[in-house]
Length: 438
Ligand code: TRP
Ligand code: SF4
Image 1 (cartoon, protein in one colour):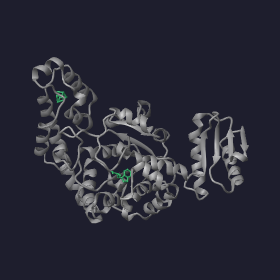
Image 2: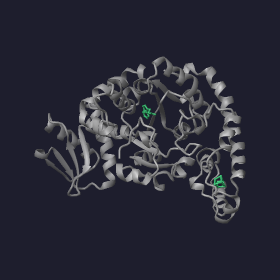
Image 3: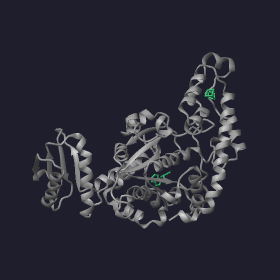
Image 4: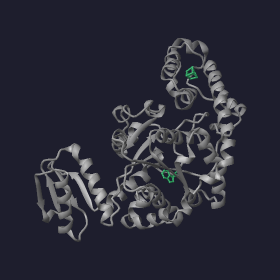
C-alpha cells in the first residue's frame, strides 16, 4: 500500500493505515489537558499523530510553538477543507504562532493552474473563508510559496540529503513526472521547516495539521529535519541514553561542547567514547531525552546548524461525500461548499446517503447505522458542538427511535445557519484582506 498525496483515493481502514505507516494513535492523554479541547480532537476525527507529545509539552509549559499548514489554491473550498482550518483556529486560541502557506507552486506543478489563477483562488475563495470561520488574520502569517525566497531556498538546500530512489519509493515518481512536480515535496519541506529559521521565530516545536494523504510529506520533512542535525540524542540498543555526533569533522570540539551542555544540565555520570563519537549519560532517564535534545537543538543554531525539531503532525479522517464516495470539488453533488447557497446545500443533504434501513419499519426494529451515515458525519464534524446532544442522536438512531427524515431536517436547519453566517463574514473579510497577505 502507498499513500499518494495527489490521487483521489479514499481511505477506509484508519487503524491499518496507522499500523502500516507507523502513525501513532491520537490517544486521550495527548489532548485531555489542553484548554477546552476542540471537538475534532475529542471525537476521534483526528485519529493519528506523529510527535504530538512535543506540542502537549509546549502548551503545558507555556513554551513557544508554531503551526504551519498549507492550502491548495484550486477549486472551491468545501467542508472537508474546513477541518484543518477549524483545527488551526483552535490552536490559535491556545497560543500557537500561526503560519499558512498558499501552495501555489504545488498547484501549478501538479494541477496545471497558472500562478495567477492560484492567486485568485487564494484571495477570493480560501483566505476569506478562513477569516469567516474565525481565523484572526492579524495574528497569523499567510504567504505564497512562489514569493517566499527562504522557503524555496530551503527546499533546494535540504534536498541535498534526499536521493532519487527515496523520492521514487515514497511518491511513485517515474520518468514521465515533470520536474516541478518532483520538486514540490521539497518546497513543502521548505514550508514546514522554514518557520524554525531564526528570522521566522527560531528552532521550536511545529505542528502540521493535515489529512492523512499528506503523511508522505510529513515523513519526508521529519527525515530531513533529523538528517540535518549535528547531534542525535537517543536511546541506544542497550538501553542507555547517548548523545552522538553525526557529522565527520571537528568531532572532539563537538564532544567538548556536548559535555559542557550536559554539565550545565547537571548530569554527572558522563562516559565519553570518542571512537563512537558518543557521550553516554548514565544518570539520565527516558523522560530527560526531550529536554536534552532541546538544548542541543538550540546550541546547533549557534554552530551554523539548523537545530530543527522534527515537525509534529496530526492526521484527520476524510469526510465521506454526500453521495457516499469521497467529498471532492470535482464532484459538486458530493460536497457542501462554503459558498453554496443554503438552498443548494439542503438539496444535497436531502438526497444524501444515510445509514438508515431500507424501510421505516425495519429501521424501527433494528435501528440505523450512524457510523455509516453522512448526515451523522455532518453533525459530528461540523454541526453539533455539544457532545451530549450528539450522543443522544447516536443512541436514538441505533435504538430505532429516530428517522432519517428527522435528522435531515435538523441538519438542514443547522447548515443554513452556518452557511449564512460564513457568507456574511466572508464578505466583510474580502474587504480588508489585502493588507494581511505578505
Ligand atoms: N500539499 C498540501 C495539499 O495538497 C498543501 C501544502 C503545501 C501543505 N505546503 C504545505 C500542507 C505544508 C501542510 C503543510 O493540500
Ligand atoms: Fe443517520 Fe439519523 Fe438516519 Fe441514523 S437516523 S441513519 S443518524 S440520518
